[in-house]
Image (cartoon, rainbow, N blue to C red):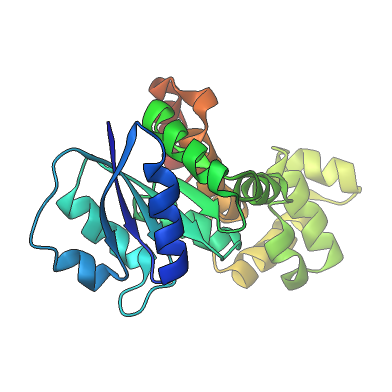
Length: 239
């Protein structure tokens, strides 16, 4: 039996989720609340809660902040965020707070049931739209966020630096002296508020590193957690 909790402030959706899930013999909804505050006030801690479906936009405490409250009472439960927000920042923040999945509310009820089953069996879930947003973010040019701060020549140098070129190789590539490369990069350091090459590389990749780590940890294709630990070490080395 899969014991499920639901926290959703929309009365219609709350009843829909509860009635639909309870139609499945293996599912039992043990609590249904309209806010985190109502959840906290529950007089009973139900045994063996495996999944909690959690809305983000709630009266009072937000769903994202409420993830910690859910995990405190049910540390073994998997939290699946149900949200009308499809911005990647909401997805990333939810996972950082401890959620095991993110489902866009436009999903069919059958998709929500499948997400519950996927989470119980594989440990995590993403709706196709949430996965698409994260993959798109992962694939973006990591230099995108700094392009407007640099001159054309400075941007060219940073691109080469990102590819692993040495100062001498950059000078040869751009037909300038190593001294010129050094002077341009000093200006780049000032504009980006860094003091070393390693700090600059870290800043370039920082926008994408969390997405990479997140995608690896929630994808069922990475069930070998040694890969996750290896990736964590890789991120730590860069930062």
